[in-house]
Length: 310
Image (cartoon, rainbow, N blue to C red):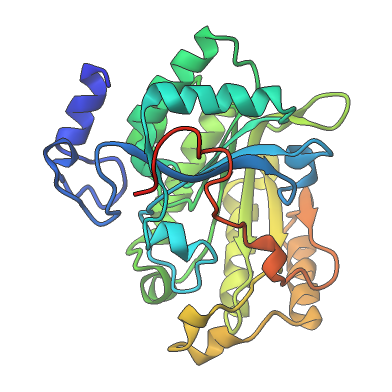
């Protein structure tokens, strides 16, 4: 761990909560992450957008802990439960290179916000050892623009969510005050860094931003506002991925509205709003995508050679 990383972890301001936790001294802020990287899975993943997964798969690393508290989170075991094993920067660099050797189309950093300084170190080490794949930053959208600026030149593809327009929904379902305005500024910074979407001849994405939105049960009016905002703020600078794969889990028992799935009529309505607001470049999911098959198995795949579970 270099001196810059140590400094940033002594008074942690990496996410918009800016809690100031001394992670190097053993304190834990809202995200519960410590000074060490912690991850729960490193494997080829085939369920991202086609330009990211292709036939070979995206080289995903699922990091433990999270800066949000989404009550419907499909990765609750690792995001809130903290399941995973600690890794050094050198070990994470080796994982990146292993995924490249397995034929991954890219290195996909899933929920990486709270480990940005350590990830920067790991990417630097991996590139010195021959890492050449595009790097995908796959996040909730609840990002500090200042932290994102640290990644300028290191990340090729940004894959943020734009979960909510309504602050009430953001606080009720994700404990994320000010979510929309924070996410918009973050996405604008992402666009500044990587520019318009660019692709290889075979369809693989090389550069750009894909904004994701997961439709939630009972929140269709909010989805309309989100789509409108994407058209107004970003236009053709981003691709838009409209997701219908919401899958209820046991954790939503206290929120009856979230115990449903999305109907075909709701998804078709959202598609019409995309046309209305000029959001025509991106991705749709065919049929009902709600399935537990979209929930990864966190069995420490790709990580077991490194350290004991903690």
